Image (spheres, helix red, strand yellow):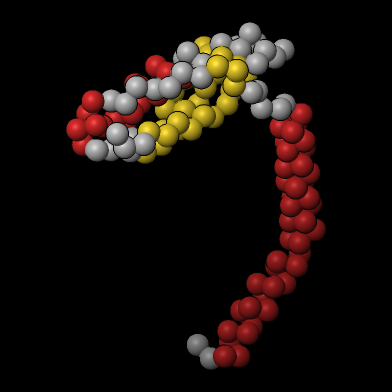
Length: 126
């Protein structure tokens, strides 16, 4: 294909894109507005502070293997500040049960509603 033929194809594509541009601009504007609204609603719910922490036990298998690492947990906290559920969303599975056992004993400051938060626990080599 020659350079002139390529320019002809690009010219046709550009013509089609220009006709779609108002719709695309409207779509991008709507997406941008929705992102701003979501960010604003998230900003209204401040993070709840931890009032009491329990340190997780270091698993025997991790000690034997000299493992260390972080575990990311998604935690559901009721209005009184107690943890109602927790699940691991990242990290080494060797630390999972120890991390969940400890996080269920944590206490958060009271709030009007149930909330979800993400907590990262670090297990340093022992």
